[in-house]
Image 1 (cartoon, rainbow, N blue to C red):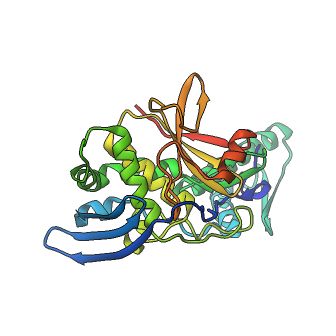
Image 2: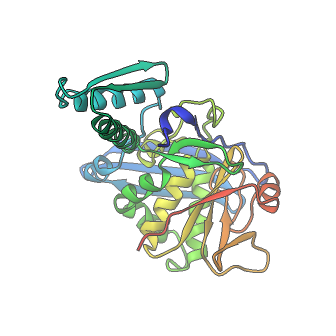
Length: 319
């Protein structure tokens, strides 16, 4: 049995500020309206002054998932232990005695009785209940097991689930972006404007991906409300907006050491930085900022990791 909650670290992502042409947010405002909350942005980029304004209804906002609480191994193990104790109470003590003790991040389970066959049966059931409870705790708190680019087993936020549970409520943002474009149905134009806007949103530092407890991640709702985010927070919102813009688009979140970016399955141009997986080409995008990088342009530090194959990916496309 793989004991995810005790045998692995906590994987989180920090985004290092990227240096190129710097986009700067010059104003941000939000106000209550009869329709919901209006968000208004102005920023300075390589293309000059830009702006974006949209309204998200209260229903839209309430349907967006909240950021998960900070991951706490002790709370996780206590959740598992309580589930095991509930099962133990269903076993007749005349058949077997069950001892379940929590010691730090570990749970010790002991079964004694006169029938070895029954003992084995109960031990197998405890192992099954243990795995089910661990999986339930991670699901309830939007975490998943993950293997990093260096093969380290860890736990990270379920970025994919955040994006997929958010995108249907972000269509007003997509409509507002398309209203700013010369060709609203041009994929590359949509992506570049969206990147430009996200890159100008203030950067929020996170702790080490291994030692942090996860409290720095901002789900799309929190990123919009508080106007700040790090690499995985902005990448998650970016992927949700891509899904809202074109539901059939293929995209991947790409995890580098201490950074995250996005790959999009679009027709590349000659100068694009890209990766190929399973015969699909993914053009790379840097949503983090504050540097302005158009689609197909990424930071030199990201280039190095991509070139050396020091990355892992997570598929976001679902039919």
